[in-house]
Length: 437
Ligand code: PXG
Image 1 (cartoon, rainbow, N blue to C red):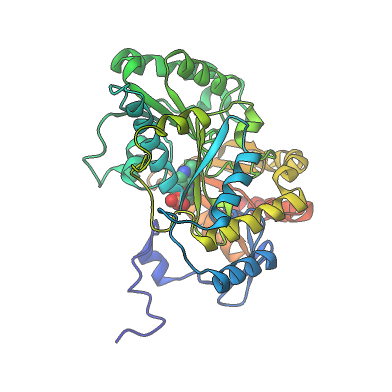
Image 2 (image 1 turned 60 degrees about the vertical axis):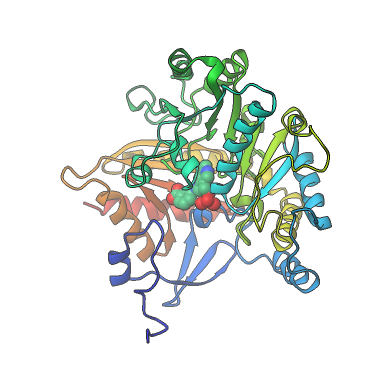
């Protein structure tokens, strides 16, 4: 019999588990901006969990909505029957996303949203008898979750390496990272709009008439906050339009206020044809994702005999009543507290504080937009990843949760963070960076 506190049984996701299990960091509570660790310490959440707890932890109205929903209707399928809150939530999302996006499909995670978005893109072209359009284009360093579609269109080598063969008919444009020209840019970098033209290379290679969709994160998050150069997303939209290619924005991280606008599509004034959402939709209080599509895409499916299912896709928990209740309560908080635009008022302090760290040892780039930030470190010559991971461990010891990917520190606090908490976070980082190897 295993002991209740035996750490061995849990096969952990994306974790250096032997290191972790030798020296575990267990969180046992959370309120507002802070976790409580098992050893009773307060840990500031510098990453909104995993870029998701946008409204801050432990919001009573969300808890209440979840409890009420469980009491009233714990579960109902959304296949052939349904329940009212799924429709209410779909309408709320349609009202708050860009006007062209008219319908919401529900999933349980960002990975499912990304794969659903890709399936909708292919099936849309099929439905229109444009059957040659099957190629799905992602971007190098792109992260679209961990399902097979997402890792195939995604461009993170480690997430792909062990799992091939991956989905056919996928390819990648280049990423937008250009340290030589854009290091220490504040907000959007000046150089690199022309990197969108890499799509022309793939149009040449595959034939524009064969490409179903291009999927990108408007700001690449997981790979270390790569902010799109000025003009880049505009150019990508233009090329897609010229060739009948759908543009999918994966807004799983950038959605729900991260940039100081409700969605990155608002920030950049570019409307995609399909938008993938998750994380902030429920402020991570309950797993849920959504995929928004245009009226034109939806209508393409609404053909044929009316007793036949139009889209052979969906999950047991699509539009789960408790998830819908959690999302509706979360959207109320965003609205009542102005959280979806709150980051805009903090962005200057965030940018200045972050860029003040430029003189710390080994810092080779700092990037920011809205309440997202990254500090890129020069790797230790013989131990890549270690320098940032050591910084992560030191920050945790000091009571701050940050996130690292490779030798990049990524930051994305809950949108309720105060000005003095931003100062404390950067003071910790200065200390951590100054006292590392
Ligand atoms: N798309 C994007 C843009 C994401 O950032 C997903 C899809 C997948 O979501 P789910 O809910 O299936 O995890 C994500 C998830 C990190 C980190 O450390 C980021 C994510 C997940 C885990 C870790 O940056 N993003």
